[in-house]
Length: 247
Length: 297
View 1: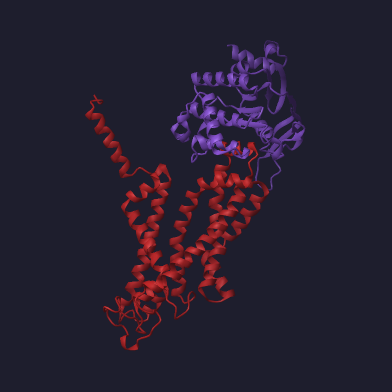
View 2 (view 1 turned 45 degrees about the vertical axis):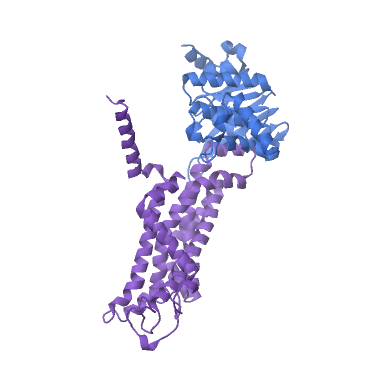
């Protein structure tokens, strides 16, 4: 469904006249199958968030292609309703001037439903992520981190896309809340047959949620492995990460 | 709403706001508000003291000072406001393009801004007056041509900060159009910055246009303008010093009000600066409440 083919990305380091560029991604290729949950694991600076932005079509790769159902993701209409996202930083993931209702309404608005339909839909979505309908009128600064992340998940599901990119979506939450959100994600995945692209540095969380994991190291894919085979990884880097997690 | 309430709780800010809006209203309805025709000459009443018919007295041609002051609001205050809106609007559009698009367009636009900003403002205005001739329209045009670069810089910095936020990224991922993202997500949060920048620019623009009119480069006789009234009063500075009072005090009071108001909105819009008395009052009330409930040991 989502096919990444030979993608390169670099950013310029200097000013306008500088040709000094920092290579972020090198020859990244993989295929994501509909409905699966693919973990993208890497340390900070490995290029995983850049890869996330490319997958969402927010930025363009320098070389290579990313296609969604055969169409390029850079094409705005091709990704509408097909891919959605939840990001790491809950302090800025909802417009501070928007209520929860308005935030969830944003992806719904293009579907041109009636007002009543939208209202009941928002309440159902909030209920599905474990929040009550009374949250509709609240502003993001009145919510806790875990609640905001739940609203973001509701907003991501509202697009009815089959693939949701979670960019460190649980990393900024604390322990017990992380577990609750992971559980929620797992339940939603089973209910709606959702697929996730789960970008994280936390192998344990990835092992809990994902079907396959992809190890990314300094912009290159080290290894892609099924979760059942996680113990038998080949590359030394992946072995090191797993050993660190075991201890 | 909290911000508005802050503005009205701050007495100085509320007073400034009332003064500024009263000036605007009087200026807009000048022909109905002014007691006399500002250009009607009464040579028999030269330098007359205030009377019931001419509340602030008469000038060197016997014209009504109060009426001239009221008619002077239009060029001194209202036209400057219009010029401010045009240049702030232009600067906002360019700042948005530069800050949102980044990359080459940004570098290109910012280098143009650098060039504009590297000329001293007064020299540019004098040059434009030299080319286009004397007149208030030309000064206003010069304001627009010079100030937009300054606004563009401020708006660009502000937009760049907000364009990277995650709710903007989410909208982009959804495939929402760029114009719509700018309108719904970026404009509301940058508006405070634009408001602060324009209100502080406004005071200096009012002073500048009065200054140019004082030098005889702005509005032309017989039309009234505060700076020009001061210039007329300068000729009789030693024999009739009171002639300077009305336009001088009006200019000083209005510009001070604008500056106080600019300070107040900056504080009202920036929560970090809002360590005001109302907040402290709230804190002490909270402590008192806790004391009453014996929560404090």
